[in-house]
Image (tube, rainbow, N blue to C red):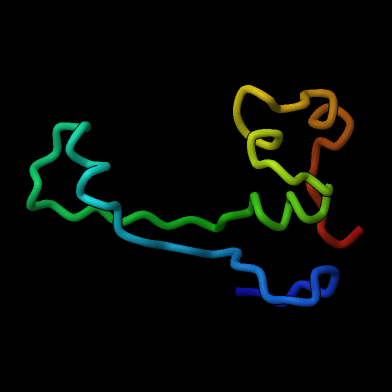
Length: 78
């Protein structure tokens, strides 16, 4: 978690967890296996910085490519 002055609350930026078994079964993995995942979760502070409310506007088929072209580097200090 990291303090966010703009939101006046803590925001999680690094996270991890274990996949639920029902998500692994369609992948053909045995039911006795555990899978962990982790990441920096840079989407959240980026969404806060650029005022994006829906993550599908940042990643996926609804991405506004003009925003990518206009802002090739995400800088949180500006």
